[in-house]
Structures are given as structure tokens and as C-alpha cells.
Length: 84
Image (cartoon, rainbow, N blue to C red; front, side):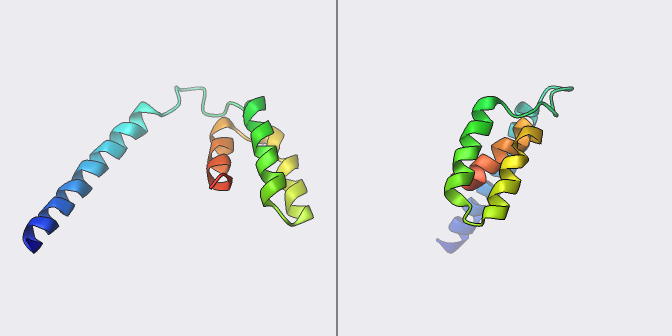
């Protein structure tokens, strides 16, 4: 039973690695679109998350000031981190 369990775990790791590589290719931004600025909707939602999650006034203000320079990818990553 233990050997079967280990073999299944090994196969899952191999399968997941292949899936992640495929997803990386499928969701990669088309060339020239990597640096698109965050949308107004992203910035608005991120501003709300910052106001709720950041207790330090200085940190909060710095993050809000940086919203206009974030790319879509950076905004998405920050939203994912703060929405948890």
C-alpha cells in the first residue's frame, strides 16, 4: 500500500509540473502587452483592499501613490495577495 501511495504521489507531481508549464504558455501576455498599466477597475479594487488591510498610514499612502504606475500583472498579484 505504501509503495502504491508513493507511486501515485510521484505521478501527480509529474502531471502537475506539465500542467503548470502549459498554463504558463497559455496565459502569457501577447508580446508588447507585458507592460500595460493596471485598469481603473483593478486600481479601484486594490485601493479598497489597501485601505482595509494596511494599518500603517505611511505604508498605506505609499501603496496608494504607486497605483498609477502598476502594470496589470503587478496589480493582479497584489490583489491576490491582499484578498486572502
